[in-house]
Image (cartoon, rainbow, N blue to C red):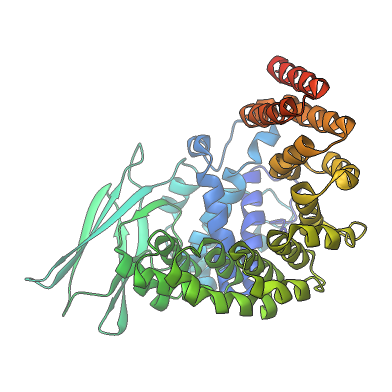
Length: 481
């Protein structure tokens, strides 16, 4: 979903418009799928912006640029969308949407600019927003925030230490600080105005959790020095998507801890399906305590979860256990209408009995897309014979570059063991062409190593034609620009 901000003859500041494009995706996700989905989209947008180092040098509003296309980047879209998400949180829904209504009506069929948006929001809210727009719209960068905590039992004082380490001036950051103590949550509103700051609270006893940025709305690169025990409490008591996501991320790093395991097992049934997938993918099933608790839940998810991606992730996790007791579950999952579930099931069966999986894969050659097609290719590349080579070779050549790269090692292993030298040379040429074509993206070392392995295999078979083909492919990669 994309909004066009107003019926403008000319939009002088596309940054305003494109920010609303990203923001509207967040609020559509929130409306359609719930607050967790909206929060997740906004957070992912911020992560995309933070992942590009040069983005911090660009103002959201840029008056001078060589090409209009320069304006359509992670600053105007993802950062801009997060800024609007933050502004809505600061003003509240009523004032924010009233301000939008004023802006749209006032500027209908006219040019749209950030200052006009500011004036509309000020009229609706009665607040001075010069500081906000100067900082976020007409300035560059973002705060790098470090948060630490100290409890003084003698004075019954909880202190929160806040520091910003980015270059330049401090960002002004209004935030909620939620303190969970005695079974209750108390919210404190706080403004950070300096690079080094602290705030203290007198309490009856040590709190179970101090949750800075309780609304999880700030645009910041954050390091939050909570203990694992505090993150465990956060997962079960703080309500937002990012509260639970942060806690789960902390838990997966320490799965020998009972509290961390409790979070992971609970997250397998989290109400928001991406967090269920995150828990499935990160559960350490080599840990006996994790596996014993997780396995029955994974089996249930694999068969009954309403989301097919969760079911596929659960099947994939169970497949890694290589437990024959799951064979019927995997075979039943092949009847799913979801390619993702079918693909996961076929791959899992391939780990249990490669030969049987090859036979099953043949039934899906003509009707497979996405994950199922990739699973067929993986099964054939792992355990197929010369009979399956033409299918794998043609499908590999038609695949997208990322799919080819993901399958490359197994494709190369298959090429290394086929008996027909013509097939072998087809594989070598294809792998070499990939390495030369995408050398500029840094794939050359991996492809060179793969070709060296093939050469070693064919040397053992006295296949001099194929070893010569490898040498030619390596030379082409070396010469490629």
